[in-house]
Image (cartoon, rainbow, N blue to C red; front, side):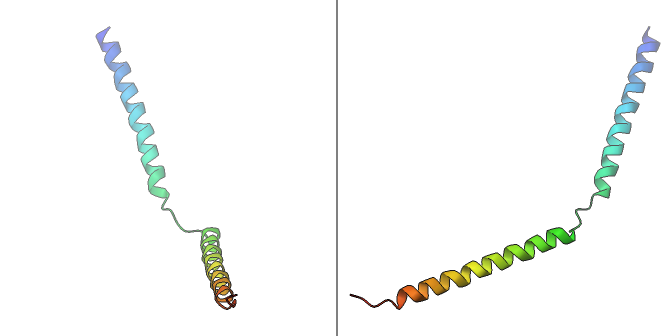
Length: 69
């Protein structure tokens, strides 16, 4: 019986090692490269922030030119 238990535990440990080895290999392949879509989104976000700053500056400029009653 002990021989059978050792064989089962050895097979179980080998299966666990194989699963984690495959998982580590998949993680090494994913290098987190920047895709064109991600770069385009970043450029659009920067453009939107710049446009918001220009609009806010124009609103503040117009508000400063309003005469006092």
